[in-house]
Length: 177
Image 1: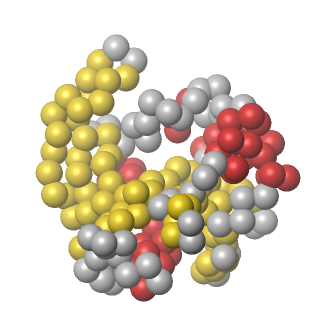
Image 2 (image 1 turned 90 degrees about the horizontal axis):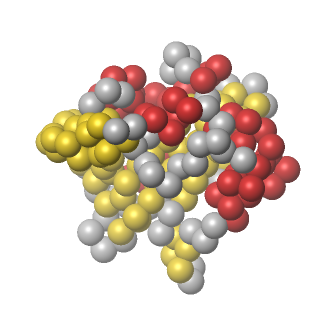
């Protein structure tokens, strides 16, 4: 599937030919420091990209996870995805990151907008949620610009580099735009 908006294209076709380009982009310590995931490796290798591209995202015909490569000017600039897709309670988790050279260009804001609308209109999701490290102000702005609201704060939730960080809980309920 392809989702387009002007000069941005999102695709869930995770073609292995993009593994090197993806790994080069993901091999940035600031990504692993900002997304609050102990499973995001640093350094990030082509093998890590291949694993990400080929991992199971469905059970039978139902997807429990979807990932979209973000392209701008025909170059990969990041990834955005929906995880823990719950068709009964109609909610899912959204996550994303943008490569260093592409930050500050509203790519994350536009991609979150596109994927949130897709989740609501095509997957019938009522609520889309995520957590953001207290230090990741850029990501908070992306979410607020897409009608996500702060639902709470978890003190000392994530341990990284020898210290604890709090996390803000964000969600978009109903059709946000």
